[in-house]
Length: 384
Image 1 (spheres, helix red, strand yellow):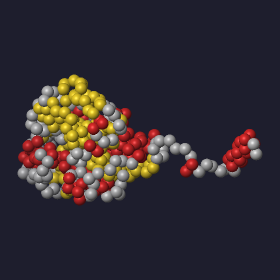
Image 2 (cartoon, helix red, strand yellow; image 1 turned 90 degrees about the vertical axis):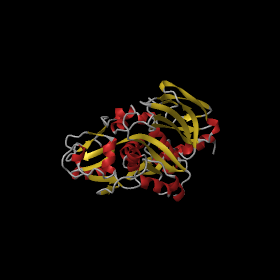
Image 3 (cartoon, one colour; image 1 turned 180 degrees about the vertical axis):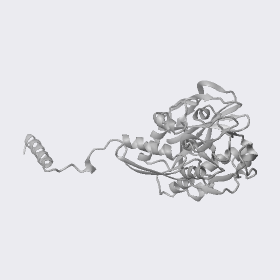
Image 4 (cartoon, helix red, strand yellow; image 1 turned 135 degrees about the vertical axis):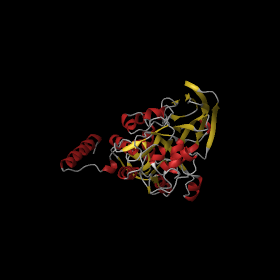
């Protein structure tokens, strides 16, 4: 059989197979883009954002199936370290003890959003009170103040609704109120997710708790201003809102190819600056006012410029660190400045050849005179 005859035979065979309904098996069909399944679980504060990211990512990548559920930051950290899920969401990093107990020293903790939290209450109790001071909140959450009339509200007993211990939301709130030490009084209830907090506060006269901004839209709750600063996204961006933390997506070791593709999408400027992301109340990990170069999720090599803005009211200093493998325990100080950078400019140069390839974080801390600070994180992929 000559070449022309063989070609004609193959074409005839294909036509015949197609006529009988035979299809090329999926295993041999060419695929483009990421594929596979991902399980994502953890922080209920981050849940709305991660669900939206999964929805958009799957629409663009139909060969990927992502299951996103809550369960709390503690569950996200423990289950990803035990290998039960692909990505664990948490409002705080793994502690050194958790890394040791969970045998999770290789964890990669990717910052995915700046999220803010606010004290909230049932409308019955606060009365006309719409703003509270840090001191008043400390007194309430330590149990020193037990009636709303003690802070200018109605004669109504205060009902404390706390998050369960291990909750990232609780940890961020403890950092603001108690400088990180958990001094919360025993509450009337401890809830394990944000949706339950919303329901409990709405149904309980006198109740007070705390929630991520994505849950503040309920008209039956009061979201308090703090010292006159309102709970809104613009005040987070301006550095005025005091209860702010970073949300993390954690993998055990560097993420698999599908997880890496998804996390790269999450930290990319196109999603972080999207209307859907903004509507949920989150602020980009790298908002335009801070690190402006390199871009979020950029693949970098060689020596690069790190440019940005580093300024806040009552500014003291700024500090730029590189968190190797997104790990706060493996930190290299890159630069420190005692002069505010009020407009975008070069903060320093970074020689990426000194560090291993993979996902890493640039962390810019702008420190205030009162020693509190605002932290901005930028994920980069070093590929020398």
